[in-house]
Image (cartoon, rainbow, N blue to C red; front, top):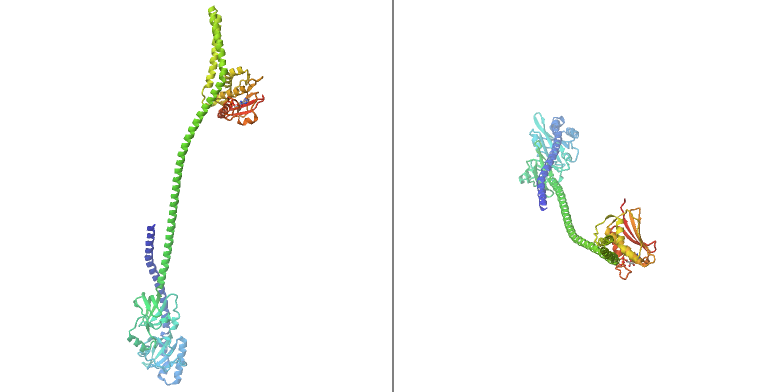
Length: 589
Ligand code: ADP
């Protein structure tokens, strides 16, 4: 992060330095080229303005009005003619003043003869334009007018008569007319003489100031020439090379203090230097603008970088929080999974324990049932035993008597009886067999009903109850045969106990088939049935109305039937007593 900011800072400084240099040079070049165009235009204008009057004195120097006036300066009529003539010329060429000097430099005729500030009678012998012209040289000169105090440009030309210079004609032009066109949006123009004194300027406060510090004797000379009359020539204290163009100049006085980019154009004819000056503030402003723009761009860049950094950090933070949350969640899941595994194991164990206990309970109930049946069964076994004994005794006697036929008949009866006993014990064994809860399949119902009857037969007989069975059928039901037999024995035993001793005990097993795949096995008796208020508790474990009852038979029976996905329900029997209905799923043939 800090490295990136340092990089941006270095880049910023480099851009500022290199770009600043480039901007400085570009702006400077642009300013120079602008000033070049301006100064070029201005110099053309000045040249054309100066040219406008340059030939006028020469042109009129030959005129008789001038020569005559010089030849007869005391002829007032001639002087007036000349005055009017000069006024006319002055007006035609739009000059400031036009006048005629005699060989001593005294004005003898002037275009402004009628004005108060008339030049007539004034002597200009000290003016260089006279000095040159009287020597026969064409002359141009600028100075402050003696009478007008205005800045003027003077054109002098000798008036020659008979190869002799008899006077000088002068045309004066107002310089302020030229200056008025100098105003420009950027910078200023100045025109300086050979002493670097400003006599034309778009900046009025610079007028008659010298760019450099002039030595005292030069100042005295200028004062004596009266070129600038009595104007105080104050220095602008320019530092920099005045001869080079373009160059940088520093100006400093009471009003001005600054650096300027200057261009110089020389007019050798008028000994005049034209300079354009543009404050370097423009350059500095461009630099400041550039620096501000660069700073803004880099500022925005830094902001963007900060923003990106902030967003990156935020993402990182979110990622970290998410990762932590994920880790925590995974840990919790692992923890919970371990807990659940323990729980599942415990439950499985408990379930297995329950199944085992249930199995044991069922077995115990069955054994209890067997106990109940034991009296009648032992009675059932004792009878054939007694018969076998008497058959055996008689058989032995028959053998002694030699009645082998009869004896053999007895033995075959004994065999039959033992077979019957074996059958009974077989029934008992298979009933007592421990059943497997998972052994659930579609089984034929008839054999189960048959073995139930066989098992209960001794008791039915001893109680003198006639069980009316259902007619043989071919139903198959979803059940475990041994457990279904246990339920049937239990229900029938309960019923037998209820109806024993009745005058006409009735006990029936009937089947009913429903259209939706159920087979109902009804066990009806004509006992007292179950009292209304006890029906709700009938299938509860340990609910019994008997003195020696356990109250487990019905509850276990219902559990067994439930495990066959069937139902065991109580209802009032059409016989008057109780009806227990076993509903089992039956297979479709
Ligand atoms: P137990 O036979 O040991 O009492 P059961 O669960 O087999 O236990 O029977 C519970 C009770 O249900 C019996 O005590 C009896 O009151 C009632 N019961 C069972 N079968 C009949 C029935 N056929 N007629 C009337 N009451 C019955």
